[in-house]
Length: 49
Image (tube, rainbow, N blue to C red; front, top):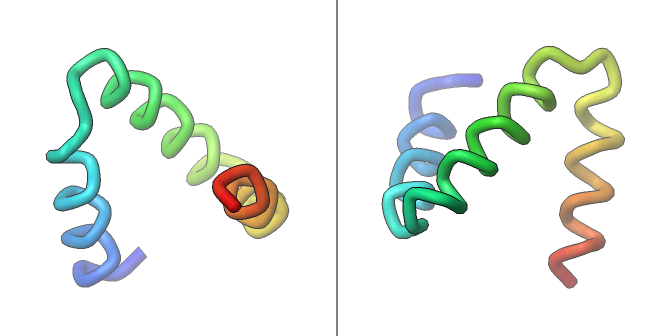
């Protein structure tokens, strides 16, 4: 992930309350460690639609 994406992510997370932030960080950590992160990201996008 490049710095621009990280900056966008941090800006997004800064608007989230602490409880949701903790969950978001856990999800982000799982995505970054996953072999199929594209699949996970696509599922998350579908859930947000």
